[in-house]
Length: 128
Image 1 (cartoon, one colour):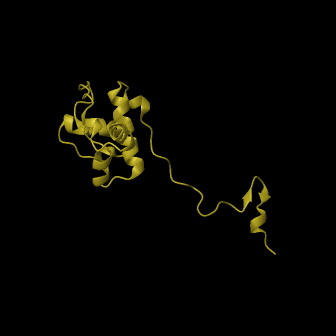
Image 2 (cartoon, helix red, strand yellow; image 1 turned 120 degrees about the horizontal axis):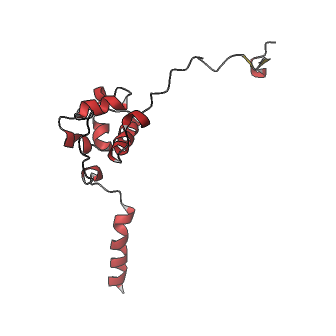
Image 3 (tube, one colour; image 1 turned 180 degrees about the vertical axis):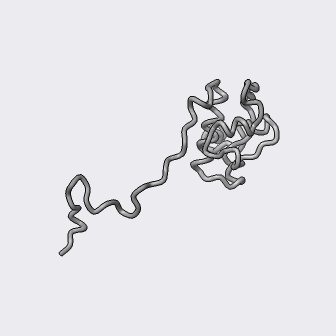
């Protein structure tokens, strides 16, 4: 009876634990394309100044990057997610010109917004 319990418990362990293995290193490295033949050229095509944030010497090193390595390099979460998403899109065969988009622009209105919206004064800012 205890043998059956231990096999059930051991079979549940891989499903309940996070993988500590770099799964990006297991995926195939995509071949070089005409314009994107260096890691810097590919990162530059992604935009958002990704070429200054990530340094990869060889093409294979670029495709072995994962989230924890980018976190050690000091990238913000938004940058990490965008770079990994862009790498996966490129791996699937899409052109970076089609899927890359610029970062969100800076807000033009500072603070909590204007006191008048849609021609009406906001009640919380009413003067007495």
